[in-house]
Amino acid sequence: MSGEVMRAPVRAEAAVSPWQLRWRRFLKHRAGVLSLGVLALLVLFALAAFPMERLLGFDPDSTDLFNRFGPPGPGHWLGTDEAGRDELIRLMVGGQMSLLVGLLATVIGGVIGLIIGVCAGYFGGRLDAVLMRFTDGMIALPLLPLLIVLGAVDLTKLGFSAEFAHSGAAGFWRIIVIIAIVDWTSIARLVRAATIALKERDFVRAARASGAGPAYVMVSHVLPNVATPIIVAFTLTVGRVILFESVLSFLGFGIVPPTPSWGNMLNNAQELVTSAPALAIYPGLLIFATVIAVNFLGDGLQHAFDPRSER
Amino acid sequence: MTRYVIRRILQSLLVLLVMSFVIYSLIGLMPGDPIDIMVASNPNISPDVAASLRKLYGLDQPMALRYWHWLVAALGGDLGYSRTHSQPVLTILLPALWQTCKLLISSFVISVALSFALGITAARKPGGWIDGLISLGAFAGISVPVFWLALMMILVFAVQLHWFPASGIANVGDGSLRDQFVHLVMPVTTLALATTGGFTRFVRASMIEVLRLDLVRTARAKGAGEGRVVLVHAFRNALIPVVTVMALSFGVLFNGALLTETMFAQPGMGKMIYDAILGNDFNLALSGLLFATLVTLVSNLAADLAYGWLDPRITLQ
Image (cartoon, rainbow over all chains, first blue to last red):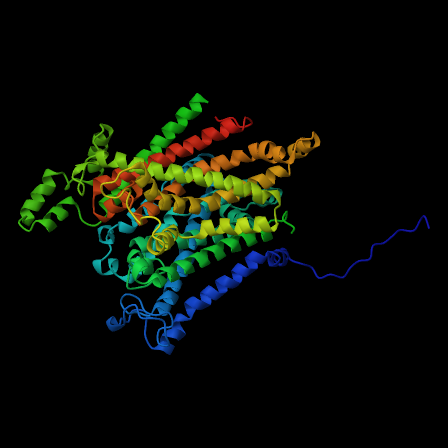
């Protein structure tokens, strides 16, 4: 008996990749899963504009001045706004604008932040000092007034044609660009910290010792290893950007009417509050629902990606 | 320490200088110039006269030179003349700054107090239903569009219930303290509700972290009561990161102030900057933006100093 070795039975279990593990942990975060569902519904709602336009037979810009502030009914499911336009279709198209601006501005800002963060963290020294002072300076700025000034810039003075400067496309891209150039700082700082921690790890040193150049090391070793905190930061940024977009469009410096966005549908909301309160409620409620779902999703992802959080 | 403070002040001044150039250039890119506005309101000005006026006021000079002239004047205390108010910029700026301070400080105090209470309560039993409820509220506070929250406050409390006035700082002819207070209730509540969410999440996270530490176990072991453990031993340690975050959030708070002031028609800095940009009041917009930046920079510096003071392990160099 004494010489016998106890052997633990080997369980035949399929190998689980880290991403599968993370997905399983995410599924345990109820609020996160629920938010994912809500976001999917909101995307479907925004996309439903295309079939709805065909079904009801009018587009978001078609006005009907004999039917201003029309009540909800079979023709107009949520009624009509101050120019007799269908509120439901405008909400749907506005949703496309808000979600698109949120995603695109985050991606562009994220790429700026990634490049600045990786370069500062990887090269260190003087470049790091300059880039981080620049980032600190950006963080110290009051963003909203700055965004308003950027939104008020006359594009023709920058050499764009007057025709382009006053088109809807210019309004759409302008808001994406101005949000992206002010909102990249959190990602830059995060990536820099992660890069500094990674740089001295053995596998990165080994790669450098075997002759890998900085660009190769950054793309194939550093970036994949900072992916998880970046995904979380990206998610939270989307929420913030959607709020910025709504505020700017509301103040008249964002998406240009007649193209609807959830923000500019509230343009004259101060008057709507007395005449048609429902029109002041819907767009804001949709912004609120989207941003809260995005933030809960970010929270859920953070839990899923953090190995210490076993709940 | 003194050297650190001096270096930080110099850095902040440098940021301010760079910002003044950036904002000056951006404002130069806004539609029209002062002479365009004069021409638009007076059809008797011929293009020749407009051109000579531009020359007279130096608007035909390159941007960098114009900036230099502005900077020299500004350093001498001359921030120019406001077009829309027909008064020197400083006489408009200072009362507006005071109005914004009233709004910012009162809502800041309220949201700090609320977030301490809520955050500590939530951290006592993380994952419990009270924590769940508080977290939901905190997420709502972070996610709500401030201007829409203000709108809903107006809808419910001004339009439907008639409890509070929807705009202004005082009724005409009645500047009494009570009247001013009544006009501040809704803006302050709106701003406080919006900022409490983020603060609560920081307090909660920091408290949970500290409650796990050995110092809490030691305090319990030596027989300190639960209230004393949480409020004295844990809370003091949790305060360090929280204070920094709160001081750093001044910029965000200013964004909120701009929106609440605009929504409730309060004559503060935020509304002043917004109106100045809309009304092509270049001097006022420029000075307003720079003052806002200055306030944010000072609060960031204060945050750093408070950090070193609260946590003796950190030496500022």
